[in-house]
Length: 268
Ligand SMILES: NC(=O)c1ccc[n+]([C@@H]2O[C@H](COP(=O)([O-])OP(=O)(O)OC[C@H]3O[C@@H](n4cnc5c(N)ncnc54)[C@H](O)[C@@H]3O)[C@@H](O)[C@H]2O)c1
Image (tube, rainbow, N blue to C red):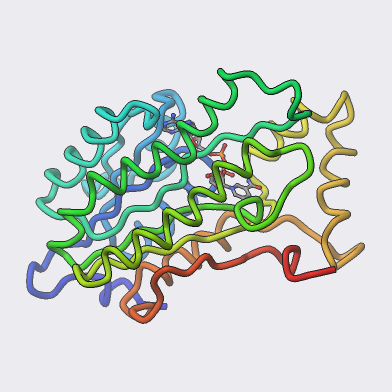
């Protein structure tokens, strides 16, 4: 891992700039905290202005390295605006972390068009169009993209075909962009985490737990090879891998979909 000094671009003598979508959520917030600690400037994008305000209260040290940007990434023009605002803020963009995401589950013969569109628009379309608009600025800095896919982007999750479609799409968009962008000096990787202790899994437990949220969470953990020792991934553990992928030490890594799931998808 690089220390704070090493994250400073010596030529420009300015902090590197990251755009983090879903920046007010569990993974996004932990990643922003990690990047700020490492000396980056962070453009924090989220659809929720209220959660962005809370995030600013927690993260902003008053040194001007945090820029909250409210944007709904389902809307292509909002993706363009979020990327433009953050790129123009300090005249550079070095890293994009696509951490915005939404979950849904239920029998596939009950899925509505609205549900499909919402999940695919946030998780896949929004992720792609943030990348699409960030490419020119990232090319100028030799920057990188880190997309958050999921174990559900690598194998099927029973009762979550729509979410799997979105995250499988993110994994392959990542690989395709990586080979396309290699000659232009932009690295593109994805992380495929198992269950992370963020508001998302508690939303899942409340919404889909059939009145037994604790049972729902226990059931999630029951699939891990650690058995009784199984636990949820901490958001700061995901942030640490993101920080590594954004560092110069990760130069050989592009087109990777890195599992971070306690072996969940390794076999059984
Ligand atoms: N929590 C898990 O167990 C888990 C596991 C694997 C992958 N993931 C993925 O990790 C990423 C981060 O999830 P998290 O666990 O931090 O969830 P979270 O719910 O805590 O955060 C997601 C954030 O995305 C934001 N968001 C939702 N719709 C948006 C939109 N249209 N435009 C902009 N922002 C929007 C939300 O407001 C929220 O702040 C997601 O892509 C998720 O699918 C999560």
